[in-house]
Length: 306
Image 1 (tube, rainbow, N blue to C red):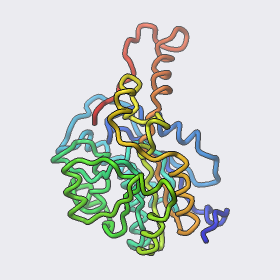
Image 2 (image 1 turned 90 degrees about the vertical axis):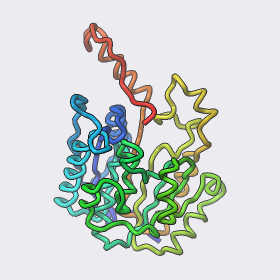
Image 3 (image 1 turned 135 degrees about the vertical axis):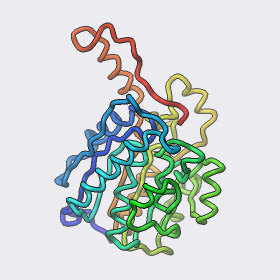
């Protein structure tokens, strides 16, 4: 059994990466900062990847929005990982593409013997020809498809047999093609309700030395957890009717705890925290007397759908 002792935490890097350009939504910057504030204090090494909120000049480049910016931030994160050479990594993001550097690093460090639990409502195997948001390209890049420069920067591609989707319930036709190409395994939200056996049995079959957990908060059901892009207050009632039922918080907690009790988890990434109320409150405070600019009329910007 894996113990969560001080010894196992001694060489862990806690990486704050408030990248928002991969999803073209500035709220992910605030979302990452709030995640870092809310997360328990630890004695881990702590670093932050520099991310600018400047939106000027950002555009679609070679089929990817803000490609040069996202690429630079990926390399910056990689440099931090190489500097510290941690055994374990916690990533607090930011859009889903913050996972590219830590997964690439750990997969190389452990010679490809890392299982990836992609706890996410979406498969994130899209490519520039179909979709220009890099947050939906990250797993495709790790598999060796997608933008050539991103792929070339990955020292060891992820074995598709080492990937399990957990809670997957929505995808595009272009993504389904890639999923079928690599024969990727998936566990639906319904299979997680009673117990974690479907995930644990898959892990037992793969028998990895290490496990990385990517946790996109959008795997959670928006009817319980509303700090998600899809839970826009202006369209919330409509989206409740349209969006497939996701997993409950307690279900995901139980699954991840069960995995960690039986396997050596070396990475955890938490992404796409979209704090609607805090984001709108931040905008309001910027426009009030004595605090902000009383001539400011701009509302909090966001991009939907993306």
